[in-house]
Length: 162
Image 1 (spheres, rainbow, N blue to C red):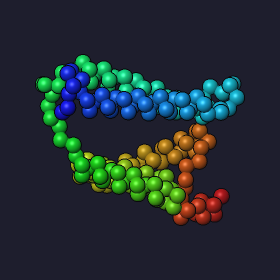
Image 2: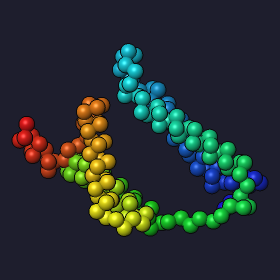
Image 3: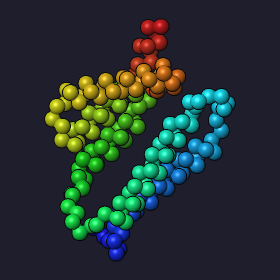
Image 4: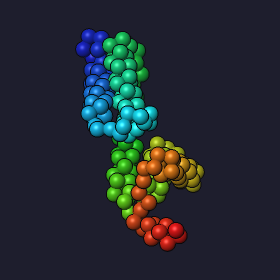
Protein backbone atom coordinates (compact mmCIF):
# COMPACT_ATOMS: atom_id res chain seq x y z
CA UNK A 1 0.00 0.00 0.00
CA UNK A 2 1.37 3.39 -0.97
CA UNK A 3 2.05 5.72 1.89
CA UNK A 4 3.44 9.22 2.01
CA UNK A 5 4.65 9.76 5.53
CA UNK A 6 1.70 8.69 7.59
CA UNK A 7 -0.87 9.32 4.86
CA UNK A 8 -2.21 6.25 3.09
CA UNK A 9 -2.53 7.45 -0.48
CA UNK A 10 -5.21 5.03 -1.72
CA UNK A 11 -7.49 5.76 1.21
CA UNK A 12 -6.90 9.50 0.83
CA UNK A 13 -7.84 9.30 -2.86
CA UNK A 14 -10.99 7.32 -2.01
CA UNK A 15 -11.84 9.87 0.70
CA UNK A 16 -11.36 12.73 -1.76
CA UNK A 17 -13.55 11.04 -4.37
CA UNK A 18 -16.27 10.30 -1.81
CA UNK A 19 -16.20 13.88 -0.50
CA UNK A 20 -16.31 15.26 -4.05
CA UNK A 21 -19.31 13.07 -4.93
CA UNK A 22 -21.12 14.12 -1.75
CA UNK A 23 -20.45 17.80 -2.45
CA UNK A 24 -21.50 17.45 -6.09
CA UNK A 25 -24.76 15.71 -5.21
CA UNK A 26 -25.40 18.24 -2.42
CA UNK A 27 -24.83 21.23 -4.70
CA UNK A 28 -26.96 19.74 -7.48
CA UNK A 29 -29.74 18.99 -4.98
CA UNK A 30 -29.58 22.52 -3.59
CA UNK A 31 -29.64 24.09 -7.09
CA UNK A 32 -32.54 21.95 -8.36
CA UNK A 33 -35.86 23.80 -8.32
CA UNK A 34 -38.11 22.15 -5.78
CA UNK A 35 -41.75 22.02 -4.84
CA UNK A 36 -43.40 24.56 -2.53
CA UNK A 37 -41.74 24.98 0.85
CA UNK A 38 -44.79 23.65 2.71
CA UNK A 39 -43.77 20.09 1.92
CA UNK A 40 -41.55 18.43 4.49
CA UNK A 41 -40.73 15.47 2.28
CA UNK A 42 -40.00 16.65 -1.23
CA UNK A 43 -37.98 15.49 -4.21
CA UNK A 44 -34.74 16.75 -2.69
CA UNK A 45 -34.93 14.82 0.59
CA UNK A 46 -33.30 11.56 -0.49
CA UNK A 47 -30.52 13.19 -2.55
CA UNK A 48 -29.78 15.44 0.44
CA UNK A 49 -29.58 12.42 2.75
CA UNK A 50 -27.27 10.63 0.30
CA UNK A 51 -25.08 13.73 -0.11
CA UNK A 52 -24.80 14.13 3.66
CA UNK A 53 -23.92 10.46 4.11
CA UNK A 54 -21.27 10.64 1.38
CA UNK A 55 -19.68 13.72 2.94
CA UNK A 56 -19.64 12.08 6.39
CA UNK A 57 -18.14 8.85 5.01
CA UNK A 58 -15.58 10.86 3.03
CA UNK A 59 -14.57 12.78 6.15
CA UNK A 60 -14.26 9.54 8.11
CA UNK A 61 -12.14 7.97 5.37
CA UNK A 62 -9.90 11.05 5.30
CA UNK A 63 -9.49 10.85 9.07
CA UNK A 64 -8.66 7.13 8.82
CA UNK A 65 -6.12 7.72 6.05
CA UNK A 66 -4.21 10.19 8.23
CA UNK A 67 -4.55 8.58 11.66
CA UNK A 68 -4.59 4.80 11.33
CA UNK A 69 -1.09 3.35 10.96
CA UNK A 70 -0.46 1.30 7.83
CA UNK A 71 2.36 -0.95 9.07
CA UNK A 72 0.13 -3.31 11.07
CA UNK A 73 -2.49 -3.49 8.39
CA UNK A 74 -3.41 -6.87 6.96
CA UNK A 75 -3.36 -7.34 3.22
CA UNK A 76 -6.69 -8.02 1.55
CA UNK A 77 -6.90 -9.22 -2.01
CA UNK A 78 -9.28 -7.43 -4.32
CA UNK A 79 -11.81 -9.82 -5.87
CA UNK A 80 -11.79 -8.80 -9.52
CA UNK A 81 -14.03 -11.69 -10.58
CA UNK A 82 -16.83 -10.73 -8.18
CA UNK A 83 -16.47 -7.08 -9.16
CA UNK A 84 -16.71 -7.92 -12.86
CA UNK A 85 -19.77 -10.12 -12.30
CA UNK A 86 -21.55 -7.41 -10.28
CA UNK A 87 -20.65 -4.79 -12.90
CA UNK A 88 -22.08 -7.07 -15.62
CA UNK A 89 -25.22 -7.55 -13.50
CA UNK A 90 -25.65 -3.76 -13.21
CA UNK A 91 -25.20 -3.39 -16.97
CA UNK A 92 -27.76 -6.15 -17.53
CA UNK A 93 -30.21 -4.43 -15.22
CA UNK A 94 -29.78 -1.21 -17.16
CA UNK A 95 -30.56 -3.03 -20.41
CA UNK A 96 -33.44 -5.10 -19.01
CA UNK A 97 -35.12 -2.44 -16.86
CA UNK A 98 -37.47 -1.01 -19.49
CA UNK A 99 -38.33 -4.38 -21.05
CA UNK A 100 -38.60 -6.62 -17.99
CA UNK A 101 -39.41 -4.02 -15.34
CA UNK A 102 -38.01 -3.17 -11.93
CA UNK A 103 -39.06 -6.32 -10.11
CA UNK A 104 -37.56 -8.84 -12.57
CA UNK A 105 -34.39 -6.88 -13.37
CA UNK A 106 -33.78 -6.03 -9.71
CA UNK A 107 -34.32 -9.65 -8.69
CA UNK A 108 -31.76 -10.77 -11.26
CA UNK A 109 -29.31 -8.11 -10.08
CA UNK A 110 -29.67 -9.23 -6.47
CA UNK A 111 -29.40 -12.95 -7.24
CA UNK A 112 -26.37 -12.58 -9.52
CA UNK A 113 -24.63 -10.27 -7.03
CA UNK A 114 -25.20 -12.76 -4.21
CA UNK A 115 -23.73 -15.57 -6.32
CA UNK A 116 -20.76 -13.36 -7.25
CA UNK A 117 -19.91 -13.01 -3.58
CA UNK A 118 -20.14 -16.73 -2.89
CA UNK A 119 -23.75 -17.56 -2.06
CA UNK A 120 -24.75 -21.08 -3.05
CA UNK A 121 -28.44 -20.75 -2.12
CA UNK A 122 -29.74 -19.78 -5.56
CA UNK A 123 -33.44 -20.24 -4.83
CA UNK A 124 -33.15 -18.21 -1.61
CA UNK A 125 -31.28 -15.48 -3.51
CA UNK A 126 -34.03 -15.24 -6.11
CA UNK A 127 -36.82 -15.27 -3.51
CA UNK A 128 -35.10 -12.67 -1.34
CA UNK A 129 -34.40 -10.49 -4.38
CA UNK A 130 -38.02 -10.85 -5.46
CA UNK A 131 -39.25 -9.85 -2.00
CA UNK A 132 -36.93 -6.84 -1.74
CA UNK A 133 -37.71 -5.51 -5.21
CA UNK A 134 -41.43 -6.07 -4.73
CA UNK A 135 -41.38 -4.12 -1.46
CA UNK A 136 -39.39 -1.27 -3.03
CA UNK A 137 -41.76 -1.24 -6.01
CA UNK A 138 -44.80 -0.93 -3.75
CA UNK A 139 -43.13 1.74 -1.58
CA UNK A 140 -42.12 3.84 -4.57
CA UNK A 141 -45.32 3.34 -6.56
CA UNK A 142 -47.89 3.72 -3.79
CA UNK A 143 -45.98 5.40 -0.96
CA UNK A 144 -44.03 8.02 -2.91
CA UNK A 145 -46.18 8.06 -6.05
CA UNK A 146 -43.08 7.49 -8.20
CA UNK A 147 -43.53 5.02 -11.02
CA UNK A 148 -40.87 2.37 -11.39
CA UNK A 149 -40.91 0.55 -14.73
CA UNK A 150 -43.33 -2.37 -14.95
CA UNK A 151 -41.71 -3.60 -18.14
CA UNK A 152 -42.86 -3.63 -21.75
CA UNK A 153 -43.67 -7.32 -21.56
CA UNK A 154 -45.93 -6.88 -18.54
CA UNK A 155 -47.69 -3.57 -19.35
CA UNK A 156 -50.38 -5.30 -21.40
CA UNK A 157 -50.95 -7.84 -18.64
CA UNK A 158 -51.49 -5.13 -16.03
CA UNK A 159 -53.46 -2.89 -18.40
CA UNK A 160 -55.94 -5.67 -19.20
CA UNK A 161 -56.49 -6.47 -15.51
CA UNK A 162 -57.75 -2.93 -14.73
